[in-house]
Length: 190
Image 1: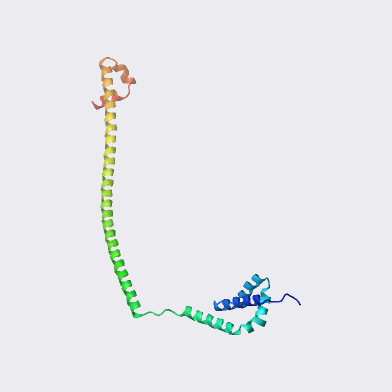
Image 2: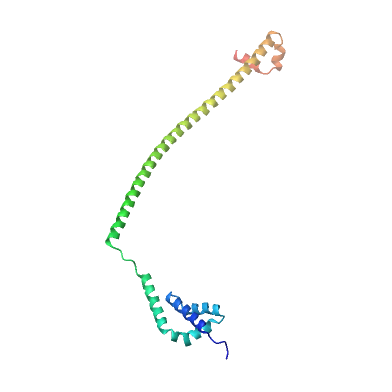
């Protein structure tokens, strides 16, 4: 004898596992693997025992399990029936959702228009302030230029005044030749 004998308990476990697997839509090979792990036998030995002995004893239960599997598969495939009341209710829900969405869209469009108006006002204010700033900078540059010109004029006047004093005091003759050149300008203008 090659291996140990099968017990009634092992046969019962094999039958229950295979029948459950078939009913639930599984296959026999997975059931053989499950049983083999529980009773320390190979899946091949479990398959051989099922086909040679147990299936013949459980032929009626096996046919019933296959029939249940088919029925379960058909139940899953069938679509639930919908009544006219279900359709009407669904349409009313869609209509309410449509009106709600449309109202929300109207509110959002109104807010968008308000925001666009505010944006236009802000852009106009920005343009006005930019123009004022440019005018201020231009005025500031003009003031700087005039101030610089005024300082030069004062310096020139100071040089002329100093030259006139020297001339009055008798120092003018010597300084005219060596001078700054301001005196010759004044004389040339006279």
